Amino acid sequence: MTTNFDPRDPLVRIDPYPIYRRLRETDPVHRSHFGYWIISRYDDVDAVLRAPGVSSEFYRNATWANRRGGRDSPLVRSVQNWMLMLDGPAHRRIRSVIGSVFTRSSVERLRPRIAAEAERLLDAMGGGEIDLIDGLALPLPVTVTCELLGLPTQDRGRCRRWTEQISRVIDPSIVTEDTAEMNSAEVEFRGYIFDQLEKRRSTPREDILSLLAHTEVDGVRLTDDEIIANVLFLFVAGHETTVNLIGNGLLALLRHPDQLQLLRYNPEMISDSMDEITRYDPPVQIVSRLLTEKVTVQDVTLPERAKVMLLLGAASRDPARYPDPDRLDLTRTGIRTLAFSSGPHYCIGAALGRLETSMVLTELLRRYAKIELTTEDLAWRPNVSFRGLQELRLRLTF
Image 1: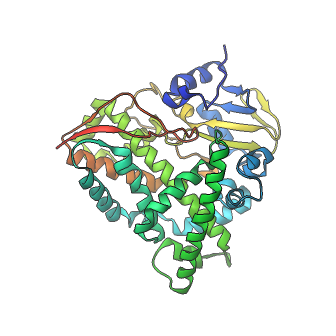
Image 2: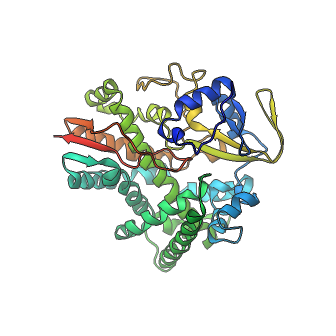
């Protein structure tokens, strides 16, 4: 028996893991009815992410580009410069510049600011019944990204709105209304970042945007288009991943009260627990690739120009890689999560997302004696590439 997998199925958003299990067991290299090959086993997903002949340059696909406004639309012109959407030397060039300024030390310097912002948001929420997504998980990563880039925090509301609209660009389920909103948001956000970049050129500061404006690699600087496009990408990647990681992570702990208690009694474990938390319910569920040459997965040869959908969520629950994978076990060892991808496109902001989430969990457990779900009737966001809650209603007791 095979499963006709469709990521747009509402059941996939509510609980994809039984569907993933059937795919792994019955049809791990699945030819979907909408034209993609679906890969669900850990070793296969990891191998494709690392394989030559595998491209991230989806903007070259006419169907993909047309659904986002066409190749000359503002959004598609922008993503042609996103390091997420580039291969080979072009990808390495931009990643080397971003990586040279987006360092572990630059992330660590944000620790006091993350703590202060988390405390401010939790102070505003107080106790009783709250929505953790709207009250903390959504505003925190945008504020942190603004701090990282040196953008005024009073602009975080606009940056959050633009980011949420543009982030749908990689979602395979977008509709016509999304296309108009995404392109409008790109034009507005681009103009805003251009103005900020001009200020850094005339008056540099100690922030990443200033460094991007002046950093050279092998004597070459990024163009304005490349800088602005990748600032937008950093907002999208940092925002979506961290919002979902906070929400999914706390939900997993609430559904495994023994593991929540383990962290209460051993808060020093929280940072190291992030590997298991991201494995259990990854914030990014699906990434896609185009094949520039034939690729063999198990005994199936995928043809050149095939579109491949890699199920990171399914790979993270593969029992061939992780014994008893449907159980959250914060003492699990040997974790090499694919939650932040693998190979040349490993998420450059993974350390920041993990830091933000671990600090939020630390503060929640320090501040509240009891954290409870007020309902099991959960609403998940409609984006099929990312997995995240629309809200997380909690009862917080001091």
